[in-house]
Image (cartoon, rainbow, N blue to C red; front, side):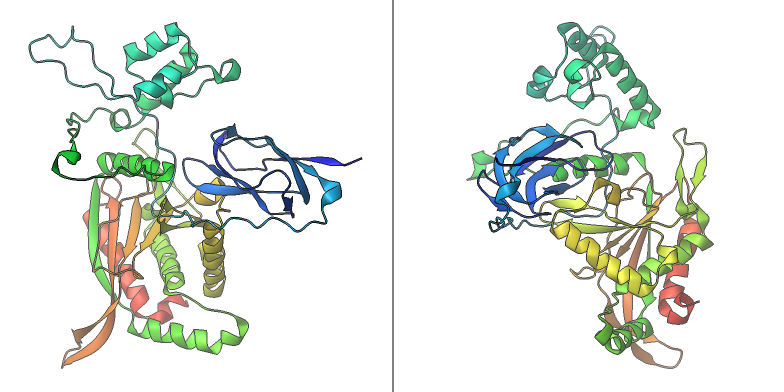
Length: 433
């Protein structure tokens, strides 16, 4: 008699639920341990769920669109038929990014302005929500009415009743949380919505749906942009000697498989900057009246993919060598490409680096990855003539763009931090101290 094994969703981090967006196996497929079974999507990343056992797929227990969590049953395996060749896993594009990041904070649905002729206190607000999803929300008519009265989008509320039914107290908790955010979480900015335009009146058009990560990243970035007063400081670092040292090091250690990237040096320089200027390694508390100082140094690295942005976090950068960082950066890239990044691997960052050096550009204004208070943008280095006091000489200059939260960091400290980074990168001896 065949031995049936149940394969469940493993630990997926802090998320209660993720959505199944792709089934990667079929009944009758032979699979090995760690072969991917399904692709799931959270509000931060897409990841593949691996198999814990080998065998032949007897039954797929999930469908596209299902919500699953840790412990959910994915497939039934016939372990007695494990000798068959494993099914080939489908190759997917990586889903990684800058500034990433955390699910958008709760926000009250924005109400449109009342008609001018009607008194404001008598004109009921129009809730700007997805009405189709609002109708499908699991809530009683009374709770729906309560949500409309408060201007709450039910699609944003998590239910705690039976079968996740939304209760009155869930809406009350949601509103309380939203009001704790500065300016109500950015819900009421008094800005008129963008008009709807029928572009087809001028020619042929095609509508392409954004990925879930694109949509949520956009909301997150918009929230950060309108709630955080950004200032961007531009600078340049002379990395002529540093680049020469990097290349020589990679040649000397090629037989050991060590290949150090410029990003590893920049990460070490940033950590030294965070130690020298501790306010850059802090976050505002919920009241906005105190700073939470961090005594650890976890650096987020923004990575862009065709489907969206994610920010994997490299932890304890201060305790790792340049070669350690280079190896970890490579490992993170492979995980991202194979959709193996867990939500927990994209949380807890102190400071983010967004490097566009491999693409181009002279400078840009990166958006802060709140609740962090600063982010460093790195553009493509290029040779420039630099005056040395007697004549011009060619130097390799790296453009830096430092955006910071002006509620926490003033302009003088922002300029000092940027200058300090330039100093560190301009003389490799400082980084080795």
